Length: 93
Image (cartoon, rainbow, N blue to C red):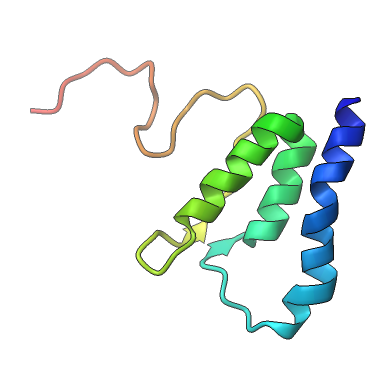
């Protein structure tokens, strides 16, 4: 069932990649592109968590957002990009 849902979630992304994206200027602020990120997130994390990662990425992709290399988090990692290592217990003085 998980593979079927992942496939269904990837269909609109693939349609965008092959039917719409070639006719638009390249303007993604991140590497990999948002659509490639979404496909990889779905493959690595499944349909629900992968969709969450893809939605978060799309929400960051705007003129006032960041840019650069932004890979899909590895499965099982709990480190947050914004805060560093969550196990680190030190105060900033």
